Image 1 (cartoon, rainbow, N blue to C red):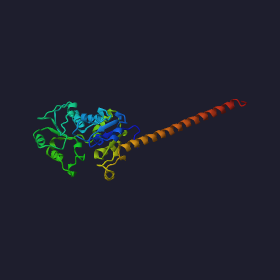
Image 2 (cartoon, rainbow, N blue to C red):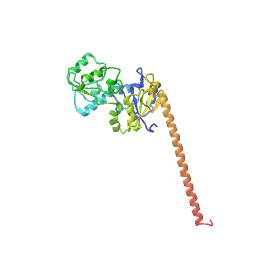
Image 3 (cartoon, rainbow, N blue to C red):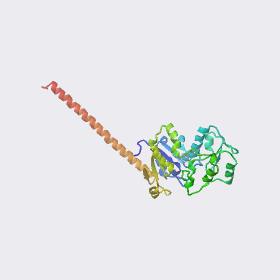
Image 4 (cartoon, helix red, strand yellow):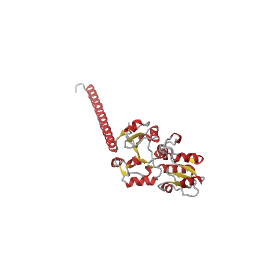
Length: 294
């Protein structure tokens, strides 16, 4: 059963189809109050600021502080623990806005931390990692499967090499979007019981939503079909074809709730009237006892 006053957490990546806005998603989200909408991305090579600009430039109503991005959360977490430090980013996008926003100085010679935001590392990037003593950090979101279990993964990637080669310098504190954002939601006085996670695929870190009593709505697509859902080891509370169906579903739910509330209101009004009539009869009976000749 969905919460009566929900807050929604949307995956930004699912709101765009081939870099074009999904019109049904835009219509649905803009029907919700901005402070009830939260957004996150699984993309590590984009900053918090760039996520916000992407949403705003495509006419999505959103609040800056309600956007979560893996690299921003990771840097913020490390800053909270280590205080001041210098950093360098191995990135395809060269998006440095997270470091600017969090006031982290960039050092391309011998930084305290090297953040890896992409799996497309060049020979120069690998040489840079070898020639420094920097702590190497990246988000779990960089792992395609989201669990960092390289020994079980069939798709061998550069992350396995990095972990094995630099294992004494690796720091990966961020495990999933919900764990790391829990403090943010508590600061904003939002309980996980009111949170609905809207996604277009099911992943291990999304499944953790159940642990926090969140609800999950899955929007099917070409990359994750109904057959994929049936064969998935993870669950969703509601499975729908698209955002248009989601809007219709919630409108019907709201209408049923309003009708139910109306019936409850009528019941209590009727009950109050009956109690009032009962008191009236008691009063008349009392008068007849006092004035039997009346």
